[in-house]
Picture 1 (cartoon, one colour):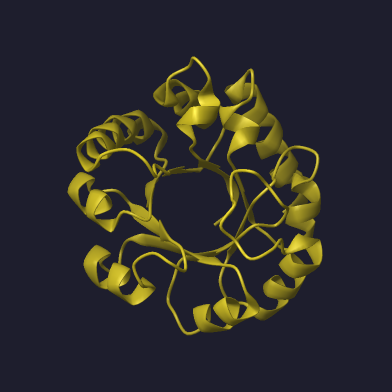
Picture 2 (cartoon, helix red, strand yellow):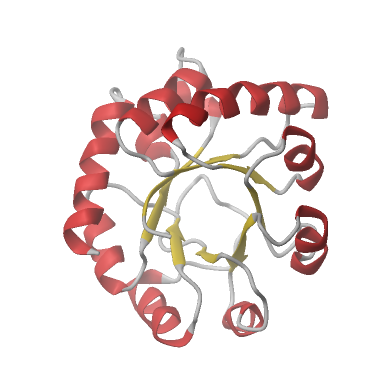
Length: 206
């Protein structure tokens, strides 16, 4: 996996709809979109996911659902992302099937080692830098952490946590092929322009 990975946060979108921000981001070159909804009802989450899936279809951008394997199955999403406190990876793989994209967050070195035994499509290094959008983790990895994991792991790395245009190049050079952002796009005045900027940075350093 390489490129720009958008993780959504509707609260950061201001007076814009989440769908509009996502559309602008994929127009700007985002290659993956993960819907993260912690507070929505299951019905609302499903309806939203179906709308977003239609938006992404013309761009061939996969829809990845955070945590909720049930929602991913119902809407036929291309994948799910699970954390260390979510459904265990092997159960998610069993339910989603061998063709699904499944990412797994790693927050400790033990998590990294255990991920080597799994056939996940990528590991989400979380968080790289301290960020208010990820408050339930065990400390930031930093650039040294990215480099250490890159040298050890057989999986592609998706870096998340405090990513923006000022540090994306350093993160890619440290070994992450994919940069996941939340506020850098959701809170940007122009999500399409910000996405293009980030895509250019990533391409220049992969």
